[in-house]
Image (cartoon, rainbow, N blue to C red; front, side, top):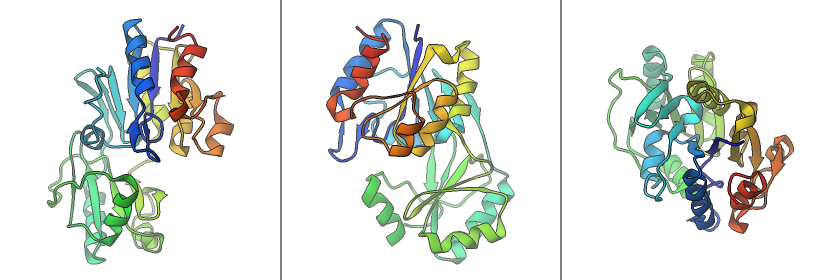
Length: 258
């Protein structure tokens, strides 16, 4: 019996080609919650980004949020986990970015900010994701889970040469996630599931991109039909594309809704 379902956001709950949240998905989520099945977000977005994107304005009471690829985990109003970087490493990242006229987004538990005003690299990134632009202020030593560097690949060596021990994940021409250790969605899910006493057989998850694959370590992983081919190959099941009501279809297939 499925007791909980975890959902990625971009191109899973939200379709970027058509710029819409998929209505059938949220109707299905409401039905499953009425039947006692919990609904969780599991996104690479920071908590603040998910909030600003409208994730709490969809008529769904999310039972918990996994954000920043597992670095942030909350259950209801309780923050259960927030992985932070060594402040010395954050300061080094800021110095490297500043002397190369770059900007970064630093992520705290529930906020985010830029260390310098935006530039053409930031504009390139937001041309893809249409995200809101955070405020600008300097780093003051607060807890930061990671940084989003806005720069093309030719700048990578500047950071890796000085801070080779950090984890770098480039997911966009002008976007690189930097953290102390690699953040994995599966680890965030496992942490939350242990808190709730859930087993892998009691959990479903939906995703579309490479960062979603680790969700399968803690659940039956379903790749949406509009997902990447590598993700489909790693999934337990591939449902129809989300614009074709794929998530609703899969929830019916697995008996989560009737």
